[in-house]
Length: 245
Image 1: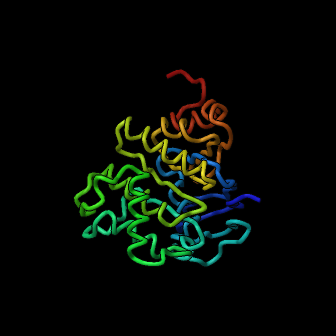
Image 2: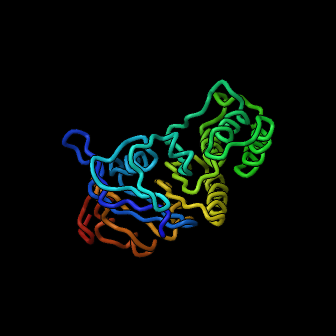
Image 3: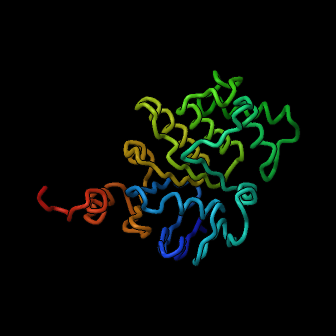
């Protein structure tokens, strides 16, 4: 049984088909890349899976159960966690407290605040933010805020992790560090869907890549196969494959 199945999922905004009859599967422990040009529908698809938006048509199934009217909080308690392109922290709270909040409000919450804080410290060590545990969140740099986004998501103990450009703005060394973290998450049996423009990260992490363009899925397969796909090359370059510059 697949952990996640999207069956002909469509999302309309007026007459705009932001997501157009997309099929997608993801297994437990699988790390799948979701790429495509800006405006391709990637974040909208993640919003649909996480419950921030509702599909116009089609079906989403998580761990064998259809996702219907649940909002983001209910889906997080079911085991679907996500990060956001624009980090969403509690700015006036300390980093450790931000992560502890997630531990206290997941499906099987930490039994007490001290236990949640202890768990927060473990997660912060895992993502490389131990040195900033007592910092006020709004004082963090953008790269550290992205690490905090990942830490909060992991504190929910997800079965499915949706990463929306969590590596944007990081240095190559920082990207390599987060690749190792996400690879470890997948090795623990968590399904991971990675939206990323940093192709170094996609190629280093993902055994399978799905490509969206104008809301439609135009490719789904192994890395080498997808990057050589003429339709993918045309979507990114805007010219037919093999055409002269």
